[in-house]
Length: 523
Image (spheres, rainbow, N blue to C red):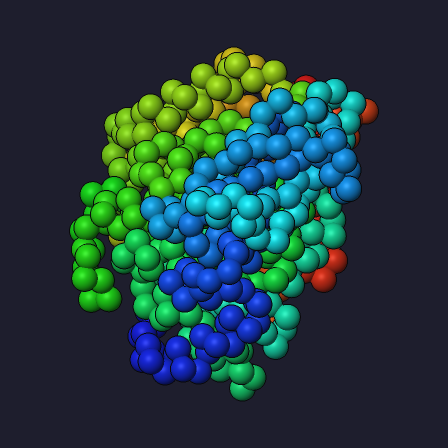
């Protein structure tokens, strides 16, 4: 992750007096549960769908008080012949959030759903239903598949700017009507303060919607929850969530910049120095605010890594390159079984790739493979460590995986990531590499979605990357006004099986396009 300068916290009373009321007014959201206990339950934070397959998915909602979650699904917006699902009672244990698992859905169909919140003591007292829609994955490989990906949201102090209409890029993505959105991590910046305003280098003033939880670094469970709620203050985000289902993973800023298990912080902003305590609190809040099939809301159990199968054309392998990694270091060790994935996750990934019969196998990585991402003057944060020679450190684990893919003749793999706050296309080939026992593959980088832009990182030659395309600002932490948000688009043709990658920038421009052929071991 690029270096981010520390920003001192503003006076909390000043922040609240000047902008908390503006936050609520901007989003039109209900007051906190303790302040709105009369009347009927309200779902003002919108709805989300997640981890949609051909026959199943999760629906998410947040109430303003204890309530029973009721879901109806139908093939039509009129909800004729609707199917009903009884969800959980949501309460303070999950910050009034809840998910309902849908099973037995028809494949390849547009599903309309609505969520009603009912008083758990009086089911007749219900709030206004909130509606959403999604498409289930197709059962036939002859149906096209299209999805978007990006990451890095509300980072480096660039929050919801009401003068610009908020996170408008979400509306642009929504209008593309994808099957789903892959959020590649850094969904929040729990370690990033959002000030009421920031003066740009040219003298213009960027204005932010702010909240109490964003006035300091997150440490408590309540502060992590408030960070996840922040993005939902934006109308564009809530409209997007109601129409486009998500596949969500996490990276470092959900907890703290460049964190790794066992780390003890040397940071005066934190009173809690044990990163494992902070990570557990963040994972609990993460499980509450996103519909993830392998996590249980309100729990620290479960896992982020999973396979989401999207019909015969596509499997998405969601990695967790944060929870199991070893400590950041110079990365020169000749033996490293832990690496960035952990031994068990690596074996899981190899096993699931070997089982996959999908035409395309997207490896959703929250960090890039060949880009050098530093952590201080001597240590490294991602896989690469700047030495273009034979694999060392975390590179050893990736070499093992790439060797496995080649020897098992697994076709159709490509890597998607975000993290570095610019967009790029990298092709890896053994003839350019120090390590040669692998088949060629592509890695595509996109982002940031709503954060500071950063210059391009150095490439590490161990796996022979060639940066075919790069689009990055010239200076660090360029605002979204100066460096418009980036996101990627993947389209798989149901007839030919060809996969088209488009790297996009806000405003409708396509920066780069690449077409890949199905069924090849390497290309």
